[in-house]
Length: 216
Image (tube, rainbow, N blue to C red; front, top):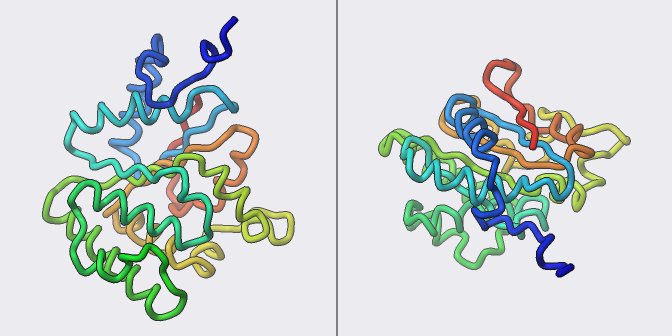
């Protein structure tokens, strides 16, 4: 047997045969919920479901603008998530020149410069939502990897960091949570089932009717 025959390619639509219902459920959840959690066993095809299944449907629908963060976003506590979001917007041609200029080198500094760049990004996301009438959906694929690489921060006392503390300790997540609360932004978090408990850190909305969990 050829090993490649068993490899699930996350961008290959042919590997999603028979999963039309799963794709449609995820699509509908992303349209009506502000926060969606997608859980599944390792190798179950979560990334393929998102990249080869969900993204094309969102592109065709036009009511939501998907912003997929590439894998490297997980490698840093706050600089890389911001840089990945910036790059996703640039790829769409939807980010203001001021935002690009403030983080052109991809290496944000801590302190005032970092907070200034985040503030500009927040205003740009609000502008896009209000002017283009197309809600942005940030897709945090491999969220479990992000938490694993920042394990000491997410599990400081062997207990998952609560949303309020996460927001206080990380300005990027504070920005995301604030926009979600204002209904200016939506999020899709993709993680393995055995690490799904970590999703409690990003349950920014107290109202369960505004969030939903899907299984893969």
